[in-house]
Picture 1 (cartoon, helix red, strand yellow):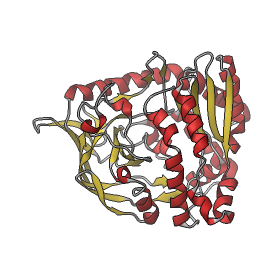
Picture 2 (spheres, one colour; picture 1 turned 30 degrees about the horizontal axis):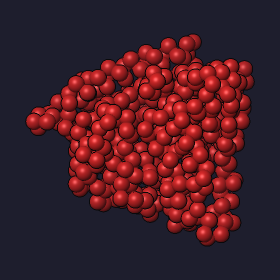
Picture 3 (cartoon, helix red, strand yellow; picture 1 turned 135 degrees about the horizontal axis):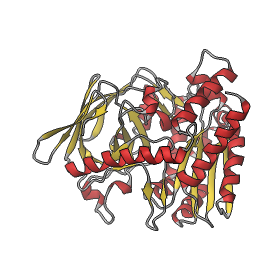
Picture 4 (spheres, one colour; picture 1 turned 120 degrees about the horizontal axis):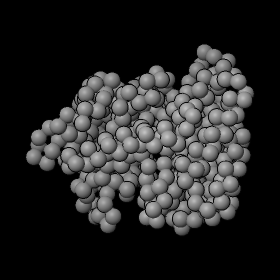
Length: 408
């Protein structure tokens, strides 16, 4: 990709994120997080945000070398500390509705794979605890937010390890521009067309009023009970004030809330899971009465076990999502090592916290079966072999997906 084409599409990505993803409202602030390498996109986002009427754009940066410095030089007690004051302030800002959230994501997969897994687990747990107010503001749909990707050297090298840095970055950018549809003449129109299909699937699933979903294929034999009164969600979301926004770009899923007590069977995960800077591969989990009762993995087993023991809810499910194997991300054939992408290539379940948006307003979350946790970790179980049946309240079965494709 030549420089001019790259710059044009990067500008379109910034505009898409601000105008369509966040749907920034005049007078809002933008709380922006990004890796240091994404400064060119951050600057473009700031331009688009101020053009849209932002009061302020407030950036927070992460950096691979600074992240590793903590594990290489930090004193022991620092791994049990996280700046709660920062996330308290961020959570309050988001809950006010006067601040929108925009995240640019480009973490290096496996950044901490060679570090002490106990230190990684402790740091992850302390961050999860401090992060609560921020996480609650997002899960409760308090404000408009959006996540978009950015290619960093570390990410590109993991996805295309046989290529030099420049070639790997170019290949990954092509995939990102295609997946976010900014390579099309009118990206917003393309997303609106995609959302129309997601809304159709959402409404068809809602009309079934299911009690559970059964996944089979590729070694998976898993029944996931659904929360009482659950709502299916997909595509764009709406705030109480009517603002419509698109949280994830890309997005190809429809999802709902499981009952935390009613997962039974075996899940064989079809893609690696990135947890705390470590890549977990070959993950297999057996469930009993809703809880992950047996966890094995080819790599990163200690890390994932610690992660699913963060708190009581971390070993239960908070989300179940359906994604067609014909999604553009799945059909790319690329393993992204990035949840934002890989979760939109396959059906998945998420360990940890539920989303309030998957229940009607005012619902009793505890009675419905909602899960509460300091984590929310998506893990992919779908493929071209996946069949999904809906189980009705009377035990009847309705085919929902066959060989990875919707049949409803």
